[in-house]
Length: 410
Image 1 (cartoon, one colour):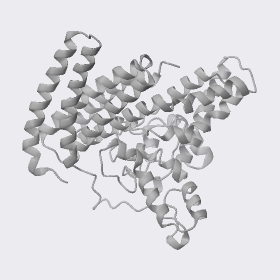
Image 2 (cartoon, helix red, strand yellow):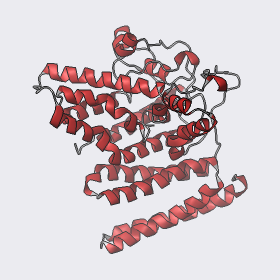
Image 3 (tube, helix red, strand yellow):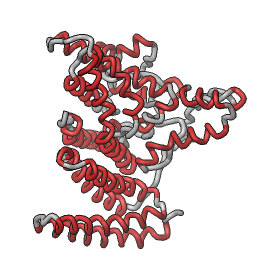
Image 4 (cartoon, one colour):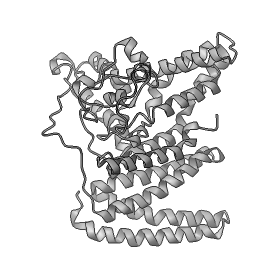
């Protein structure tokens, strides 16, 4: 399926985020922080880019099973579509639940929970690796005889449904809706790091699965968002591998091979008894708890925002036209985009290397554009675009570089 409904929905996502920002200003609530929002979008971008290469797991294996091993031939009646909606959502529930209850799988899902804010940009914060661990949960649907294209469509719609529930702007909905469907209230619980909220409300679209399988929790006190061990970084690549780095450290101190294997497939936080056993979820101390915060001057905020908007436009165009590129070209462009989003995040952290990496990027990217345009005999406006970007970025970043030199950290 070449048309990705999620990619097609990108403009709608940003319109709704814009509306939420207006609500934020009118209600005088601090729902968004620029570095966090950019980190969320960056994780979404890297997820979409990795999906270009990993979709063989999500779709390819399903197609092979459907074509060769489907047990039934089904007609597309209303019963067919209703059954598919329920099966896709049920498969999502178990894949999602196991992503919280198996340490290895949690590494592929933790990215979505790392934000300490809760707004629509968090919905776009997705892992680049989760599909590796969760695609198999949907494969029984292929054996039942549900067409691959139909499965992909309903799966995408299930994902799209979950976008709007990542908001604090909507409180409780009518009781019958709250009883059947996943709602902002239910999903706020899911993103809470409070002990009573951990591993609750795994629903995709229908909260009935949580009610049926004993994982439902009503929203009571306001959740504190994030994970029990904050990553304290705006780097989307680090966000995707931080949990596995922690796992590697734990595995080093576990002496028995049997316990090492058990650790991989046990609940996150598990250790052998001799090392303390299951680590308890810490209570949240509202008096001492502080979100990860990296104050930045306004000039840096606007510079990063300028670069990021350009990156978003370029990424959207690339995703819309990705079928026109070879696999090598996709890999090259994906690398360029990833380098940009990493830099945009780490600049807020004032890492010393990030400033020099940004100099390399703003000098090399327009040069690359100009060279590629020359080789392909492209239109003259691409030369103008490359030179304009180079001049604006160099002058702007040079001013920031001088201003921030004393503030940079190693």
